[in-house]
Amino acid sequence: MAKQGSQRPDGRANNELRPVRLTPGFFRYAEGSLLIEVGETRVACAVSVEEKVPPWLLGKGRGWVTAEYAMLPRATHSRNARESARGHLGGRTHEIQRLIGRALRPAVNLTALGERTMTIDCDVLQADGGTRTAAVTGAYLAMKLAIARLMQDGILSTSPLRMAVAAVSVGIVAGQPRLDLCYEEDSKADVDFNVVMTSAGEYVEVQGTAEGKPFTADAMIDLLALAQTGIQELLAMGEALTA
Image (cartoon, rainbow, N blue to C red):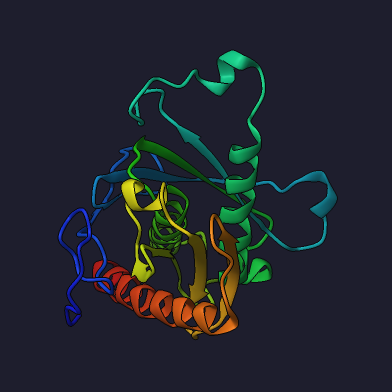
């Protein structure tokens, strides 16, 4: 991607992703797993497949895809207590879990999956901004790896995948639209977007907030276009990994 010149904390151009590293098979026992590293953010994603569905899907011939998200206590600059120790999940965790599930389900033909549940666990090992978007991208790739294994084992005869999915953050920092915000940028952004898109170029979800100065329609269009360029890069990386 061509550099446009900017004063970002890590020296990137405004339209440049952080370095991305994808490590498949991160967990030995999961049907599919992957460690995704986006800059200093690291998220481990593991897929578990069960031959059952939630009660409300019994007998309907369809499967289900769901996700859980957690952050290790020292994934951040100071220790956060485990939510299991508190006895309940926080609102942010609930929100991100639902986002990941919503992002993945359009990518899967649930009828072709059969009466099975795929649960994707996304655990943040280290956080430096963009954990939810890294989790979406990593969860999709881990799910694709799990489906390949199910086909190899003869459990599935055809792939239920309809399309690929990836996600990235964009924002306006110091008056400049920037791709893939690190924590330092995210913490002082005037506008912050999380964008999930498919390989067909369609949006699954757009979360946009004015943290400081409100944004215009033109600014939003620019941010969505910037997000699309980053997502296309992520999709290409994922395709190369799982081809």
